Amino acid sequence: TGASTSSMPASLGFLAQRRPWWLGVAALGLAAVLLGAVAWRRARPRRRRRLQQVGTVAKLWIYPVKSCMGVAVSEAECTALGLRSGNMRDRFWLVIKEDGHMVTARQEPRLVLVSITYENNRLIFRAPDVDQLVLPIKQPSSNKLHNCRIFGLDIKGRDCGNEAAQWFTNFLKTEAYRLVQFETNMEGRTSKKLLAPINWNYQVAYPDYSPLLVMTDASLVDLNTRIEKKVKMENFRPNIVVTGCDAFEEDTWDDLLIGSVEMKRVMACSRCILTTVDPDTGIIDRKEPLDTLKSYRLCDPSEKALYKSSPLFGVYYSVEKVGSLRVGDPVYRMV
Image (cartoon, rainbow, N blue to C red; front, side):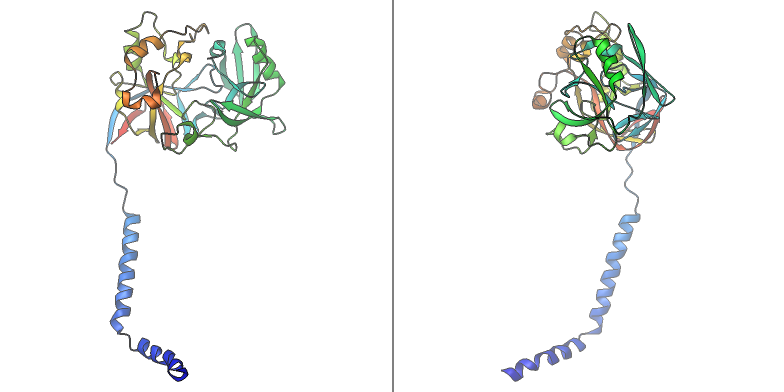
């Protein structure tokens, strides 16, 4: 047994030496074919999607502080977290209670009267019956970090100092408030936690559900034909307003290309009581335009688990490819 075992390696080596030459050539040929296929697949351009123009950008709005007045801009950079003009970013500032819970115009309707301008890397706040507040765009890293709470989810915020806190407290006159700022190195609220049934993968700072909200002026015109007291686009706080399309045509749009920005549809925007705050007076109506929207803009029964009894007006988008966009840019549907 020992003799036959010791002779096995030699016989195997002999067989290996006698392996047909064409097997090696075939193996090399197969490897070349596989490598060529991979290289061709990588070099091949992705199948181009057809672009269909559906409208034109009429307005761009950035809302630096959640629930405060928007800032109209003629052009903006679009980051994964939303619109930016210089260092002024969309919904990167938030008013909170001292326990960290967010404060919006749902609780404090007069927040919509706070106007903001961006000058020399500073935010300048103005509101009725109070002096203006000048705030540096970036807060010292020594300022306290707050644990904030937005719709049941935790997120950080850098305190903007006692002067800003006192300014909002003096203006609103109800309780003590503080102003916090989101920083890009902080962890945002993730879409998977915000929108459990929808499998998108993005983050937001302090917006409700997505980095971008798109609306059309035709849909607002349609609403105003059904309502006694006309409402403004400011009631609905969109980032991008599109003109040149039919009312509620946006319901049919999926992915969009505007400027160099590619956007992916997330879901329709379900509307709440904040839309009943008059942007000119800061008075909350609690009825219109919400009641009228409920009369004709409820979701399909199959989507009731997602939207419940809220009417739909506008569309949420995530940012698929960052870039820049401006008023007057054509809006393309990517088919």
